[in-house]
Length: 179
Ligand code: ZN
Image 1 (cartoon, protein in one colour):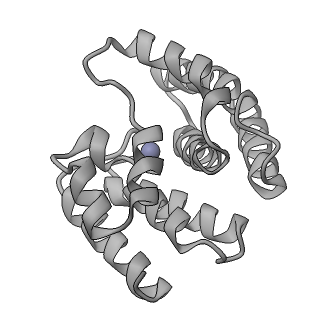
Image 2 (spheres, protein in one colour):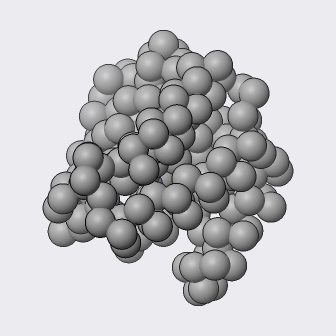
């Protein structure tokens, strides 16, 4: 494996390029890459920088779902472990949204320990992005629905990292207090 700084820098560059024209849900028209940066950084903090592949997978966790990137490319360019972590975080986009959400809840406890950490970091970032100071009716409904669902997914993922568990609980608390 390349030195960890190179490994993670390359993951960040690939992620930024692949998601370049995407905008994230919530908080204005923030570029999607901000979401990836948040997830990767949460994982880096949670593991105190001990796991470059996990942080790289954080940067890349939405590439299979949202871009033309392939599993093979992730394996060759990064590692089999990175590719397999990203696969574990990828929904079947041929299914309707409600079914994809249902499957995330059902499948969460079956994920690997490291994929569970990525899932929690993803939900922290997404709940936080939906918290607004003056939400519209639609934004309130979206925040309530997303937070309720994220709690169910995270219930099947928690217990592996106290920092992430606390961060998620804190995000949920702030989400509910904002309503
Ligand atoms: Zn994500």
